[in-house]
Structures are given as C-alpha cells and as structure tokens.
Amino acid sequence: MVLNGYIARGIMTICLIYITLSYTFVMFNDKDNYENSKDIIGVIGVIVVSVAFLLLFLGK
Image (cartoon, rainbow, N blue to C red; front, top):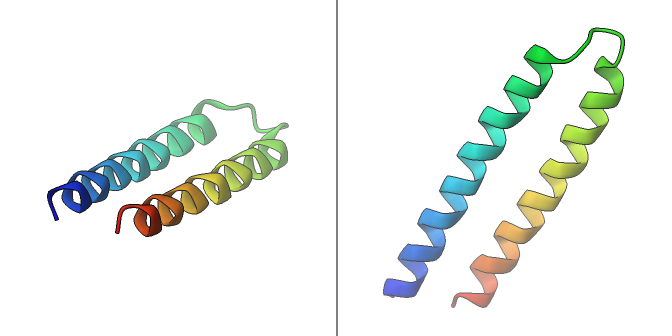
C-alpha cells in the first residue's frame, strides 16, 4: 500500500507540472503558432494520462 501512495503522489506531481508548463507555454508562445502549440499540448496530455493509468495498474 505504501507503493501505491508513492505512485499516486508521483502522478499528481506529474499532472501539476504538466498543467503549469502547458499554460506557461501557451502564455509565452507567439499568437501565430497557437494552433501548433495546442496540438503539442494535446499530444503531451495524452502521453501523460496514458502513463498515469499504466502506473496505476502496474502499481497494484
């Protein structure tokens, strides 16, 4: 059960870092490249979520 707690904390930390980095990336990006940055953030979001679920299922 201790391992699941560490995995949950790691997933929450990764999600918080992803949210802050994606918002700062959008804020400081050029307005002309906004569509490209939305696509990049979407792909990274899918990767983060899939890794989080993989860690949850492997941690049990």
